[in-house]
Image 1: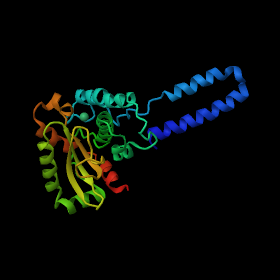
Image 2: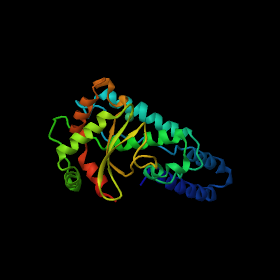
Image 3: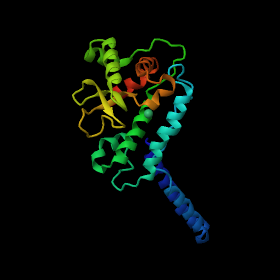
Length: 248
Ligand code: MN
């Protein structure tokens, strides 16, 4: 269940309770109840999801400081900006994935950038996993089979994905997407756009995501983006990627 849906249900439950409470307690307490419901109304629509591991968990591939700044400053800023931005066109009840898919309905640069930033990072965190011992990390499940089928071999796929990531000019993301025809494709997007959005590029469901903004690697890798990318393969959460690929 999405956070928004949960918030809605919570609000509904509390409003019903407050109705019952006013009948039981009497009208003199109604101000307190109104105060509570007003507080609920001011709850933010977008929330920063909890990181599924500690800041230092991805070392030595991504350092603690980068993770902390990336999550508490960059991702948090996208969430805060979204909550500050009023839009009567956003369906707050829908998932962030659906919101991205319908970005053309509530078009504005600020929503496009910050909704993309929030969705992309929320997904990115779940597609990483600790691997402190540096164990071999390879695709699993039906995604593994599909990668071999679409790209000949995992090594060929890895080479193509790394090249596409390295070539991004400026800030952006590299993705592996599942297209509506069932094929896998490597695509890149600029800034905080993603392949769910109705934009010029090829669209599809994200299966892998790699953040190529300098803020994702500069503290540790400086200008050596290729090293960041080659190290990232050690901490890809293939289980999660297979789940994204397999879930309709
Ligand atoms: Mn980022």
